Image (tube, rainbow, N blue to C red; front, side, top):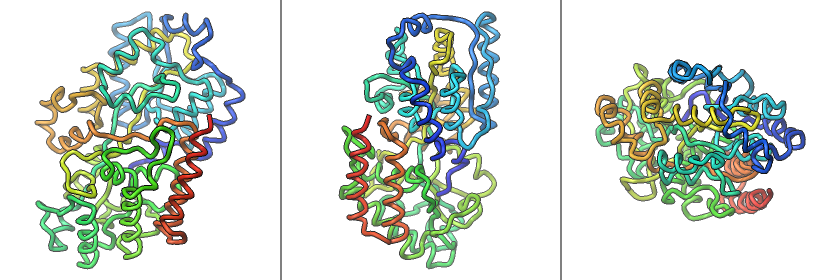
Length: 436
């Protein structure tokens, strides 16, 4: 279950120090919404700067989008570049907020980082634009509710998701005597039995190979998709309280503990992509993997297995969003660029160019021709309507790190019982969630 280029797409722990240092330096900023200058900024028009991801497919989309905008708006030119290099995109953004030189828009803002950026006063609430709340609701639908902050405002425009599904290697399954057309992966019980068959048959050394490292984001690619599928789309926290110390949460943990105990998954970190390299028979990944595995693996996909067989289970979103930063002087133009970049036309170009799912309601019908011509992506379009996001709460990164530490102790290395580890983590996370 190796995730593609994760280190460049999520917030590193080092970034917390950078972001935290900025809290005192930046104060409330525009996110407080009280300064008179903020009102004039929201209507100001003129040139702006934006950053987009260094993913080659997104770079091409970004350049084309900017060229289209600039051709039609000679007095509101967009100066675009890739996010500057750093340990993570979010560390670079956090440092830019502290220095007061963040661009107007970043087309790669991780939801987990938004609460910290908001604390820094680095973000503009999109509700401050007259049509802001309505535009987001009309484009994204009910999924947009997951991206509201604790103050009821929205500081990120839901942009694109990579719904996580379970990939399996059809050739490895056939070698193990399993039917690739009927892989028996509808439930977590079947998933575990299939994992045993894959390894005991000698077809592959590891049924799955989720990363065993302690990085705070690793639960998004082992625990969280299975928990979402088992719990009807329950997030790690609900109403400020942790939810995972439950029958569903501990059932998922026990399943993974069994994988490690029976040597169906390795406790060693793998350098590379274990699925693409034929070292694992299954992998959790999003639509980005379709292009990555092309010509390397004869793969199939199924929804992440739930406790019971289901046709409409939830999964993790692995989303990246667009945020506007408070150092932006021409916020009126920035808002219009946000809408232009997330229009039906531009979302269609993003879909066809990157394979990532624009966060639009009725995605499958809006781009029916694309999915008809590219059937490999239909599963992801279906899953995109039922994605679960990381909770938008203060101390989000510390909360996930606390969970990961408990998971490592109990599930991977067996140094503590799941009951004790989850209870302790739940109590600590509730305290972190209560802090403002």
